[in-house]
Length: 203
Image (cartoon, rainbow, N blue to C red; front, side):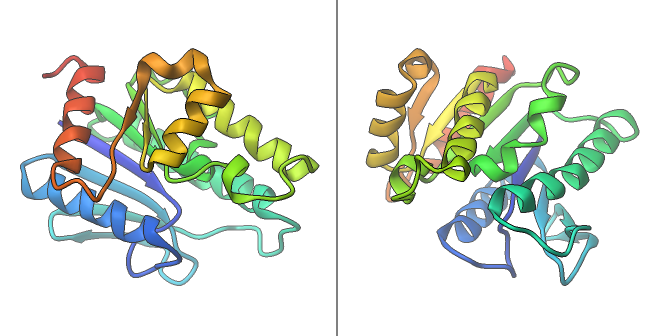
């Protein structure tokens, strides 16, 4: 199974827990025979390298100044879209796209209709939980991306009880495709693999 992980954090860039979580998932998948590609942000080392069998595409942001996280993620998504398109049409393609957080989901909004490939969306948190100003225009925009990416996803993964409960409350229409995968659980990655097989019909 060929899997593409979309993230804005991956070692050596560590901002929060996302980086180490995606790294753990990627290494586990690669060590268990999956073909893993990672598309990630890194202004210091843009380019491509193979790390422990994983293909890592480091993407820099071509726009240097941003007024907020949404403009940053929007301009970055253009580079993600370029690499995804290259992987799909010029390389061997892939079986699963797994995006982590709203910022990595942005490139899938324009591509989902033209890429008939199962898409899994992960959330460590939601804007409703993170921000005290989620009624601002920025907060509402991020919440729209979270909502729309959830509607596009074939499966949604919440990585905490709080996020799981909030998704159920905000987006009750997606409960049937919602899964709780807490990384305090020793079988967390095995659960993600089962989700991959379920949505890809390869299991």
